[in-house]
Length: 211
Image (cartoon, rainbow, N blue to C red):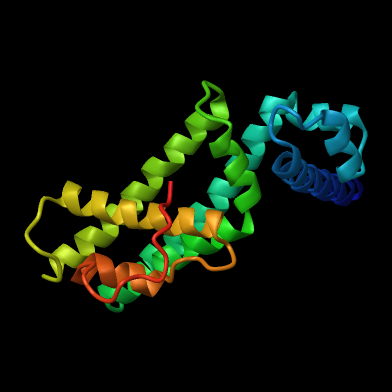
C-alpha cells in the first residue's frame, strides 16, 4: 500500500508546486501592470488559471502573495550572486563585473514589478522588511568580494565599510539604470572601471540622474 501511495503523493506535490509557481508568475505580471493596491485577487486567479479559493489556500491574502513573489525573486537573485562569490576568484575587476551584471540582468527581467514596489513608497508590510533583509544579504556578499580584494592587496587601505558602501552604490546604480533605462542600461564594465580607477574621463553621453 505504501508503495502505491508514494507515487501519488509525489504527483500531488508536483502539481501543487506547478500551481504555486503559476500563481506567482501571474501575480508578478498583474502587479507589474496594475500596481499593488489595484491588483485584484480575481484578476491574478484568472491569469494563473486557478480559482480564487485555490489562490487563498496557497497564500492566504494579497499581502501574503506579494511577499511570496518578493521572496522568490530575492531568493533567485541571492542564489545567482552566491555563485559569483563562491566561484574561484579570477581578477577582482572580472568578479565585480560578473556580480553587477547579475544584478542588472535581474532588474531588467523583473523591472516592472520591482519598479511598482519602489514607486508605491515605504510600507510597514512584511514584504518591505524582506526586501531590506535582502539588501543586507547583498551587502554581506559585497563585503566578501571586498575582503577578497583587500587580502590580495588590490584595494586601497580604506576602511572596509567605506569600500563596501562605494560598491553598494555602484550596484544600486546598475540596478536603477536597468530599471529606468532597460533598452540602454549602463555597462557593468564601465561602472566597475569607474569604481576602481575613478570617474574622470570623456564626458558621458547622458547626464540623466538616476534615482
